[in-house]
Image 1 (cartoon, rainbow, N blue to C red):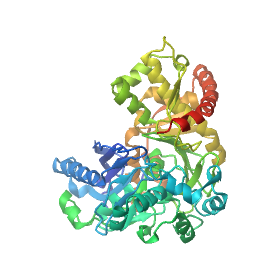
Image 2 (cartoon, rainbow, N blue to C red):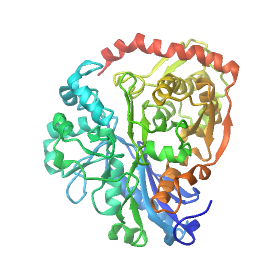
Image 3 (spheres, rainbow, N blue to C red):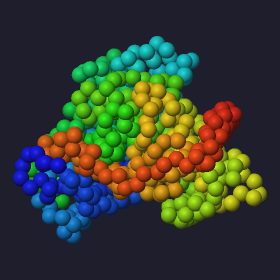
Image 4 (cartoon, helix red, strand yellow):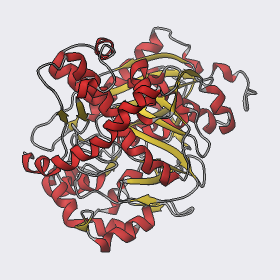
Length: 516
């Protein structure tokens, strides 16, 4: 490729932060997509009561600065190479901060459904759980709507207001996690239509891209506590002097607007063209692609959110416990690490000897919005083995994506002959092959799939800095292996794919009755 802009950009690097639910991953990435250093810092999630899921955002910040400072002090790369900071990560979580950007309380994660009763009073009703009088204007203006089950910014903001009035009184801004960190790096409050899209309060029709006053009023949200919006995929400003000094960086380092992990995954997949899609196996999982239109499928909980290219949108959907399901099995049941579990699963046959797993440990969002749903294992017998159990977990995650694939292809108006795969779960050849067999599609794994979002955030920064062009991005995202569906396994998964929705339907009422 030919570099644009200033001299010697091959030595330009981006300090990236990928804030997952488990904690931040801090990386140094040059603009050719090479990850020179990366470090993950785990963060504990607190569950003080049913429906609560909280993290300390100040701990995110402390750990990020500590890791980045340590790497630069150790000479991982010259500090003068770093020309930008870019943050990506989890969304639909909420951090309350005061006017100086200090937290006034813990972050309510996307897993926190404790304030669902408040959002249900605002938008709840008989049509798919919604009041039809509210559903139509919300979908028309934003393509989505806050959930009556909670777990999104509107429920969080209402929860702070009604259940934690002392926190609400001390709060100047309610920020998405990526905006909290971006604001800290820049020393000024920042958000964008992309980062705030999960709140479903931004009018995304045409070039409006501002908060919709009518919807904000319907939700009962104080508009003065919503952060001002700047362009998605733009520059917020220079790095704050105190932060630059702390990290030993130049004062002319720029801070790029924060992006949800969906957006950085789109860039990091290299599948940017219409009709090209990617699938993630991260803590959660999704199937997404770019489309040139705003659209909603409320039946399957699929919508569009503002993209990074003017006039384009990204398909948004989610199932909540992909990699999280395997992590739960490791932590709470078997005690083996990721590699050992995948090796064990490889000793079981396709179909796990009749064991079927429903990956709903954190509820379900797409293709059915049911936060009461919980994990399911059926078909086990006295002859079932540990290998059957582990493989069933891997297969259940892939089969959930199979359940979602048809509605997403119909939504996008395209059949995906191939999907790029990324995320920590994609490190496993077995899990990638299971996805190929279960989805009956060619699966192309990006190189170093665990770093895909970090690479995507850095490449986006390169576009923002006018050093690379969007057309350059696909060539900077290599594929390290392609997985072709195996006919015998396809037949097994065809049968299981038809059973998963039936099993959910049969247990739906049980899930609701067992809710704590």
